[in-house]
Every structure is written in structure tokens, then in C-alpha cells.
Length: 357
Length: 150
Image (cartoon, rainbow over all chains, first blue to last red):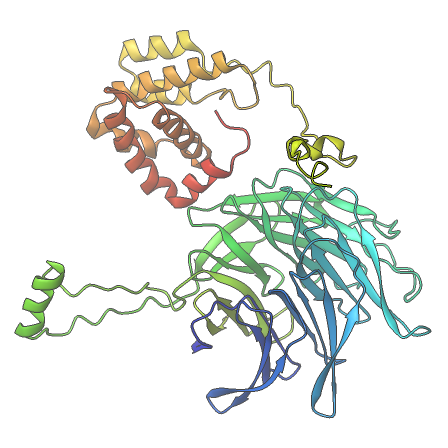
């Protein structure tokens, strides 16, 4: 477990390169910073400045080494590294509201972009005209799309939205890929087909994540609950309400274990073994041992004078992060057996967590 | 030219009415939800079976109905039961509820806060404290995010 602070600004989003030696972050502004790991420190090596609005999503494709960024200026750029410089290419996403999240597909031949325009823009590269095209998924989304995740088969796309619904769409683009085989979620998958629509999520769906096999989908919603839909059991949904503050990000670390984090500033581990068996396992954090050392008489009276208290008071939180965690990302290990994952938060810190199976 | 720009009546037009894709909330018919059974709850209170009265009053919550009377009657009944508990028994009462029961109790407590009066504020605050330790802050978050409440 290690913490690195990137400054005082909240980190809106982050993405790692393939060998995890570089991290791309955005400090709540219209700029993306890329840092290179050097020993225990991180040094800034690039600054990507093309967006005019606050950056809301970054994703780094490991194999093709391309970065896609999206911002509140209704634009998305795909960045490619040429001669040590990142060059942007504008993507025509055709949205009239801010973009909220972006994710490369597993095969990296397309990416999905969620927006406040109540639609998802699935973008792919057209070689003939040398530009990025987009197709829209509009129905039946009724409000801002808050989160996206791709199924391992590169076709299905899960979307959590502010209309309190969690859906799975087909993002099959026949120009660039072959027809997909049937999955437990369904067999007919034309573009825009809805394979799952769960309406009673109870709150905004902040984050969605497919299990490593793709047969289950987990999401966290603003009513402090975590839910899992299981395709192999008739798409049955199990919801677990928690006594914590709402969770903002969810991540599968194995086929049955899920980690989620949010406004409580520390990650929690949950276990899903089947319909009706979603339970809380533990908090993934070591509580700070408050060092109540011997206070000098001078400090004792100073405390009494200034704060009218006789004991040393802890003003920081007991968790590693000092503010809400906004995003979790797999760091080491395959999707089915994650060894390490990273979290960034509103406190400007990035923490690497170890996970023991 | 100045005459054209003087009127600001256009600012009062409700543009959402002209939106073709306007989202209309589904109206769910909750007419058959009548709220907790008043007779049953009253008899349980008179018998002194306060735990039973608590379970009974949290049945059939008028969540989906649009009938304000049903909701008010249910709230009044719940307050009656909550006030008849002894302070020391409140914790036991909360422990006897399951997760959904605690969430529902918290919804009624906050509904009661909306109409503070001499009698019920202190009682509600005591119940709130015990319900909070059982349900955590997540329980209060669910009261705030619930679209249809008691």
C-alpha cells in the first residue's frame, strides 16, 4: 500500500500505460499531465493541452498506446505518440452537452463516450477518410450517462445513468468487426439493442463494471447500494444496501470479489457468489494508529488555551485518502486475479492497494 | 429596433413543454396501499405489546400512493407508536427490525421532522440516534435519494 500526492487539486481521472511506468492524470482542469515513474518519485514528462473544458475522462489503450480524453467542452481527442510528442486528433462525437466518461474497447478498435446529451457515442476509425466516426445510442436513455464499461467480447457495453437506470447495450459496428456469437446476455445484438435495463437502481448509477468472464455486471448507485446482475441466472439482480456514504467507483478483482470506493474515502471489499449472496467482506484499509505520544507541559497548556481541550486531537481522517475516492483502476494482474489496484481522489492523492485473494 | 428587443415575455415560455423527447414519469397505481392497519396497531399498544405494535405499524407503507390523507394517517400512527415506547426500550425496538425496517423507520422519522411539535421532536431525536447506529449514514442517504417516500 503506498500513497503518492500529486498536489492539492482533486484528481478527476487517471489512466496507466501498458507497463505501468507512466500515469496520465487530470488535476480538475483542462490539461492532462503524464508522469513517469522514477524510483519512488513521479516526474512530469508531458502536458496534453488541447481541451478548453474540464477533462472528465482519460483512457489509455495498452496495446496500441493511444490515449483518448474527453472533456466538458463536448469534444474528445485521440492522442498518439509521434517522436516523443503526443499529437491530438479530434473525434467528431457530435454531442451538444459535456462528455462525462470514455473507455476504449478491449480490442482497442473503438471507444465509447458517455455524455450529458443523454446519449452514448461509439467511435471508430475509418481508414478511407482517415478520421474518427461516431454512432449514437440514444434510446431509451433519459438523462446523463455517468459511467461505461465494455464486456470482454468487445460488443456489449454497460452504461450507468442519472435516470436511475443501469443498461447493457450492443455496440456492434458491422463496418469494423464480425458478427458476435451469442452470450448469456442475449443472442441478437444489432447496434443499440438493449440487453438489460434495470430501472429501480434507487439513485444515480455512478459506476459499472463487468466481471472478468462478462457474465455478471456490478454497479454502485447513489443510494449507498451495490448491485450485481447475473446473466447466467436469468439476469437476476441482487442489491446490497450499505450503511456507508455512497460509493463512486466499482471494480471486479476476481470472478467473485468486488472492490468499491467512494465518499467514505476508503475501498470496501464485497463478495458475490450467486443470486441473493452479495455480502460485505471487509474494509481494504489499515486504520492509522494515532500516536498518542507524551505531550510536553507546554503543548498541553497551549492546547488548553487555544482549543479548550486537554487531549491531542486527530484532525485527519483515519483512512489513507483524505477525501472521496473518485476512480479505481486495475494496476497489476489479469482481470480475473488482480494483485494491485490504484485509486485517485479529491485529495489529489493516488494510492496503490495490494489485494490478497 | 429598440421596440423589438424590449419585451421579455419569451423568458416566461416553458420550453420543456415543446420538447418532443420530454420524459414523462411513469404513474404507478398505488391506490391499493392503505397504510398500516389502525385497529391492529391500536390494540397492540393497548395490550402493551410495543414491539408487536412497531412491527405492525411498519407494514404496508403508503409509498406509491398519491393520496395525502393515507400518508398523513400512517405518519400519525407511527408517531403514536414511537411516543409510547420507553426511552430505554427504543434500542431494543430498533434491533428487532431488519435492514428494510430500519430504512423505513428512518423515512418516517424524517417525515416527522418536517412537522416539528412540542411532543414529538424529543422522541424522534432519540429514535433517530438509535436508528442511525443501526443503519449507518447509508440509511439517511436512502431517505434523501428515495423518489417515492412515505
